[in-house]
Length: 286
Ligand code: A2P
Image (tube, rainbow, N blue to C red):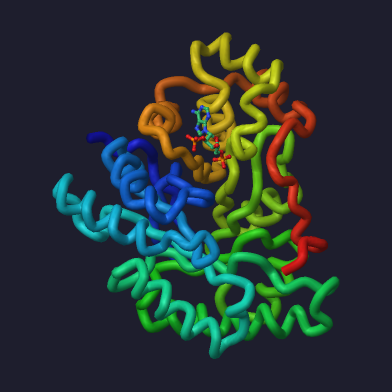
C-alpha cells in the first residue's frame, strides 16, 4: 500500500496530502466501502461535508481501514464542512459536535465553511461569515480541529473574512476543473498562502468526453481523468476526485509517474467549458 501523494504545508505548518478522495454524491450506504477502497489505494485525505449526508459512512470507512491496514489516526487527514443552515457562532459550535459525533472521531483535521453568506441574499453577509468563523477559530485554538478553512469563497469573500478575523483561512475548496478554472480565486488564495482544493476535478465526469483532453491523454498513454488530476497537481491545487468504482479510484491515484509539459498545460488551460456545475457563489442561493 503506497501513499499516493506528497504533502502540501498549510500556513499553520499542518501537512495536507496533495491528493484527496471526495465523497460528494456517494450514497450513505456505499460510503464506508468506497472510503476503505480509497485508503487501500493509498489516498490519505478524505473530504466530506455535513451536507453530503454521509459523514457516518466516512467515519466507519476510516476506522475499518485503520484496523485493516494498521494505520494510525494521524496518518489519515479527514475534512468536513459546515452546512449553510448552521452559520453563526452558536449553531456552528453545535454543528461541529454533531459532525464529529457522526464521524466518530476525536478531532478533525480540517473544517470548512461550505458556502459563504453573500450580499445578494444577506445584507449582513460579512457579519454572518465573521460570526461563523469565530466558532471555527475557537475550536481550532482548543485543538479540536487541526486546520480551518472555507469553501466556494471568491477572492473578495476571502479578503473580507481575513480583514474581519484573527486567523486567515488555511484552505479554500472551490470548483475547479478543465473548462472551469477559477483562476482569479485560486491565484488570490495561493498568493496569500491559502491552499486551494478542487471539488469536481473531473467536472462531475462530464469533461472526460472532451476531444482535446483525450487527444492530450493519448500522447501520455494516460486516461482523460488522470490528465485532469495531474493538471491540478501541477498547479499545486489539491484534487478531490470522487468515484464509486475501485478501478477508477485506483486509476485516479496513479498520476505520479509522469508530468504534463508546459505546452500541454497551456493547451488544457484553453479548453472551453465542457462539463461540471459552474456554480457562481455570489448568486447561488445559499
Ligand atoms: P463513478 O462514481 O460512477 O465511478 P468529480 O470527481 O469531478 O465529481 O467526478 C466524479 C464522476 O466522474 C463520477 O460520476 C465518477 O463515476 C466519474 N469518474 C471518476 N473517476 C473516473 C475515471 N477515472 N474514469 C471515468 N469516470 C470517472
